[in-house]
Length: 402
Image 1: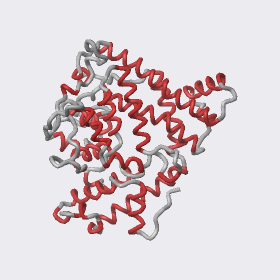
Image 2: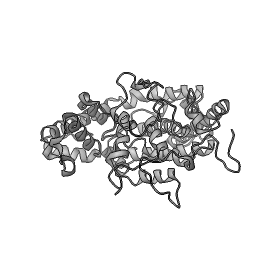
Image 3: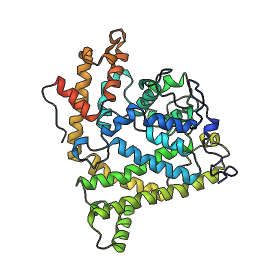
């Protein structure tokens, strides 16, 4: 792969010196480039801190060693940096996209998202990627000069498009948005700051998306085993994992069970990272990209698993879906969590005076859609435990979620 003279930066890497800038122009920092500043703004944001108390799979009080949204996010960021460094891409941009990829999630993970999506069915629904954009462009209120975090175009583009284009070149909703359309929060923002929803995301954004997959696969295996939802022998039925388990058994036949699990997880991450580096290197060489724009204009993604590793990834997810994400114990807790969110939405709709002053101010002047969205914004920003505390204030019974 071609690199810049004297630097380990690929010529198709995003370059903060050539950023398309921020919606609100700001003076340059004498000590940090624009993408590094974006990382720091995410890390210091309120939404990022709240991830420490938001569900990944298990709610916060089920155990101190299970992943939260924050620990998952930090693991994604580490993998993203490793991939970016190996491929000569911009580590700061890959990191900020990894750090920000989950900040739009409401309490209780996908259960909370389902509940808010139903509550907003007549007002555009709820999408955690669109909510992330709302947070960084509007809802964070930290700066005197602007609402939001005023992030660079490249960070906003990657945040919205890390899973691929949202529309065709002529603006028709594409992929997972083909049925219901692109969320209004995204299209509204693009009318004032075009994020080119039709193009491929940057290679750094593609890295963040694949790092998320790698972290999910490896660490959900770890958490599922810790929760006794399945055994190491069970998941060894997935050929990729079975090969690793056999390899560890041959090398360390007397290794204790806990260390054996950690060895499996470590090797899963390593094999997947190494596979992405090799496969992506082949794709980048074949594309012969000469700029970041060439990556965006490519017909397909350039950061990817090989066919064999994509099959392994599918096999892991196929195993985890029924045995972990849809396990009766997990589903019972998540069903109750959905009811908590639905109850809160219904209560604040009927009694908006119970919203905090900064959320209830001007509420009466809003139309129905804007009222519903404001309530959803408030609830989406809650941590798991704060949602339960709020529910207990207004309802006679609040589930323990155990």
